Amino acid sequence: MKGLKGKAAIVTGASSGIGQAIAIRLAEEGCHVAINYRGDLEGAKSTETDAQQAAKANGHEVKTLIVQADVSKEDNIQALMSKTTEAWGGFDILVNNAGIQTEEESHKVSTDAFDKVIGVNLRGAYLCAREAVQQFLKQQKQGSIINVSSVHEIIPRPLYVSYSISKGGMGNMTRTLALEYARSGIRVNAIAPGATETPINSDWVDDPKKEAEVNSHIPMGRPGTPEEMAAATAFLVSDEAAYITGQTLYIDGGLTLYADFREPWSA
Ligand code: NAD
Image (tube, rainbow, N blue to C red; front, side, top):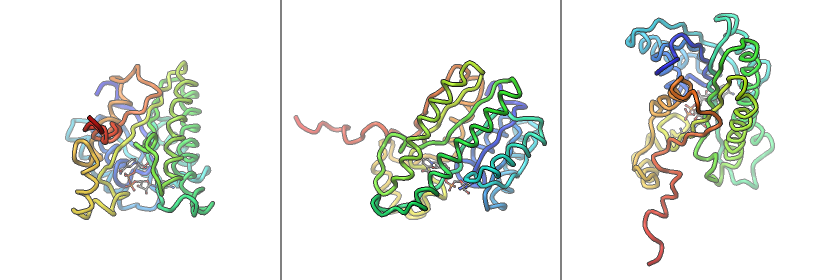
């Protein structure tokens, strides 16, 4: 895709799932990639190996960097940004992908459990975006941010209230930052995956019966793949999407199309 060769990207939570696929795809497009992980160094190393292979297979030489950081901690985020900046003199792309979820009836969620999800998914994503915008303004060149949101940016999700709040907030954060920095050449967009086959969904991806139940709710009848999320991300950060900002792109096999309306409810 246009405009990605030689760019430098930071991908948070890139040791597994969607973040891993995004890091690999950006390398395949010729980007240098900082692979952030919280605890899974082996996963991050496997991302690095696959990213290097994908870049080579596409005729690119890219630099990769593995950086440990917990995005719920401000000092860790600042260290992630400064390590990348010291190594490469700056960066052009931030992908806010790190995310967690917990299941609990909303009236029973403890304050600590609530803070934990918001701390990673929303506060962490905002702090990463804030630091990235500071760097982009200092560099005086264009920058791009992708927030990995969810269909639960707009679909309410009972038993996952903190997750739903975090992704709803992420949608408005995307639009607010996009508007505020449009004149500075900074684009901010989000991708909103539907049900995707990754470790966060281990309760159903490894169970054919449960997966069939999940598929029955998806108009296209199947889950998404991390690679499909990565393809949309690569497009949005590329120059092909140079005029797109403040948008959430739903990649969900039709999940947000109100499937219950497929057949008429009454004659
Ligand atoms: P995943 O569990 O494989 O990925 C989440 C990643 O975030 C992991 O690598 C994890 O280590 C990392 N992470 C968690 N807390 C962190 C922290 N404090 N600091 C740094 N990294 C941290 O699952 P995934 O499905 O690939 O999730 C990636 C993103 O996609 C999440 O934001 C998730 O909400 C979103 N999403 C996933 C789906 C889906 O169905 N899989 C659907 C919608 C949105």
